[in-house]
Amino acid sequence: MNVIMKGEELAAAIPDNVHAEKVTAVKHYTDRLFQFRITRPASFRFRSGEFVMIGLMIDGKPLYRAYSIASPSWDEELEFFSIKVPDGPLTQHLQKIEVGDTILMKKKPTGTLVNDALLPGKRVYMFSTGTGIAPFASLIRDPETYEKFDEVILTHTCRNVNELKYGEELVSAIGEDPLIGEIAKGKLKLYNSVTREDYPRTGRITSLIDSGKLFDDVGVPPLDPQVDRAMICGSMEMIRDTKVLLEQRGLTEGANNKPAEFVVERAFVG
Ligand code: A2P
Image 1: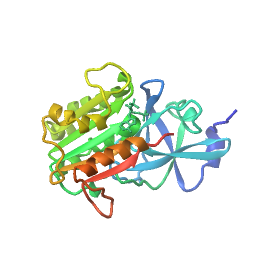
Image 2: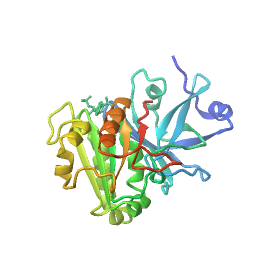
Image 3: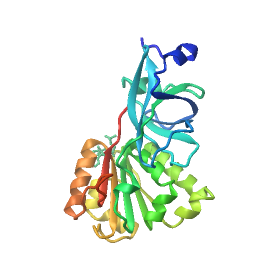
Image 4: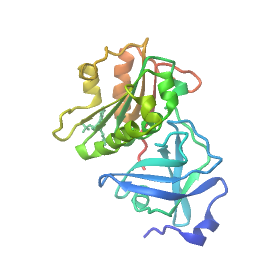
């Protein structure tokens, strides 16, 4: 039986190099997915799209996993979108958190899914599967993304229809936001599909790229390295296969110190 520390015992055990933050909201989407928000330390700075190490004290020891920050860099709080793994060392506990609980967060954010790692372009594709949508939830709420690109196409593919809800709610909330809604208007498009259930659009994103259906549906020309940029976040296999398709179309992989046409990051499993 694992013991999660709380109260004074927890306060005394928190290591010096981490922030101890309070949970402000928890929302469960399915039996596999949930979202939570925590307070943001005043000193904590990050670039939209980056990830950070999040943890809990379990059996007297801190246990951390990498989590993409789903909120934009201007937000007062920090948002995360997580999978629930029944016997996952961290997520079996994390999925039980409640408002007021303490979450540990290491001080240094990092990551490659940032606007700085892409060359300027006309259009950016954000290809995501499952919880891989999290870094894009941050980027599509950041005005900088719309300053850099005229069109932002977020693709989200999940096994089941109910897993698409987080992305759908996110994009409709952006539409209603007085500030970002105005900036994103006519620029942001959500293109989702499922692979294991009936739905108006089915199929892996790799098939939808390869067949050209994605471009026909959105009403844009096929991928062109002169104008198109991309970010990929999903499982290792999804990244590998999507990357091959982009490279076949002449796009090259970039990094923070060498911006290019696309960047990748693995969706972390808690
Ligand atoms: P599928 O149902 O055909 O496996 P997961 O939860 O396993 O990460 O999957 C999330 C979504 O990513 C699913 O819709 C899954 O499709 C899809 N997917 C899995 N592997 C790949 C891949 N190699 N390329 C593209 N999409 C993939």
